[in-house]
Length: 250
Image (tube, rainbow, N blue to C red):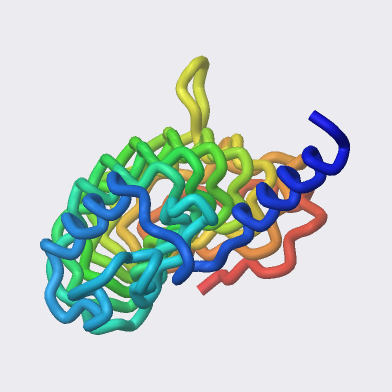
């Protein structure tokens, strides 16, 4: 292969990698998964009624140049229904935002844990109930996790401590019970989240103490733990976190 041919092929690859949604056909598996997700909703965008998700394109959908769905953003769209297990079939999804659709209810499907490339999950302001899936601990690329202002119950899964890239963790304004998990032996805990800047756990029913949660190598900026049922003193380790700026005491 001569140099000119190599350059031509390289140019074609670069163009293909940057084709915007609307100029490519959706991967068949991704298209089927989206239609299954749509089947559990009402009041979804009218653009979802016809055409190809990437080629049309559908509102809220972004795709890669090879037709893989990489982003689903439908915040404040007044949708109703549940979140189908089929969401876990969108294997290239990196961004999922269904926030402030109060008509979305039911449980958060464990299949979200299959989305190994997901970096952002925002389900705030919906009506999801039940446990926080422990499978979220599989999402090792996650940087932003917001499940606040739902109706979630159960305990905080210790597997969230495996999300070492997490910048933002918001579980506030739910009905979560139990203690904040601390790592012990081979069991992870939230004390391992040394790169997380925001811990928001306020307005729940958490109990126990916060002993062992904080470490001097944490980079926390903002902590919200008020309106829970914690006991014991404020951990002295908080004083060693030099990055900390906000710690409400109400």
